[in-house]
Amino acid sequence: GLGSGFTDGTYGYLLSDEAIGKVARFNLASFSDVQVLFLAGLDSDLTGFSGGFVGSHSTHRAYSNYAYLCPGSGGLTGAPHGKVVRIFLPTFSSVDVLDLTLKDNDLKGFYG
Image 1 (spheres, rainbow, N blue to C red):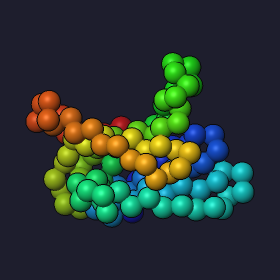
Image 2: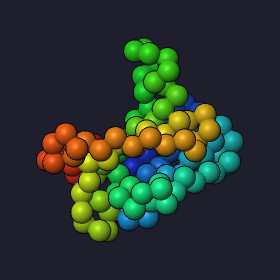
Image 3: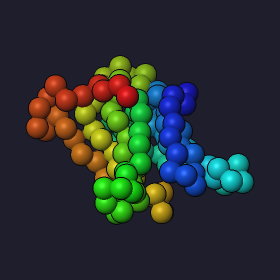
């Protein structure tokens, strides 16, 4: 199912909290224009996100073009991961992954 969400002021974003590995976005003004990004199609670990946020306008304008997803429980697989996902919002297709467990294996399964 869809577990949490956030907004960038133009779109609403909903994150799957299970093993489906999808992010949905919809236009807030028209309440339509639904788009889906299938993260698990890029990497099967990219499921079960516990939250997300948009970079702040006040710190650096370029960060506001990105959404960041918090690695959670790993969804239905029950295997937490430490992969933070960064999505380029203007295209909603470019994705970068930062694996925190490469630095410290305990950095996984966050909530928030």
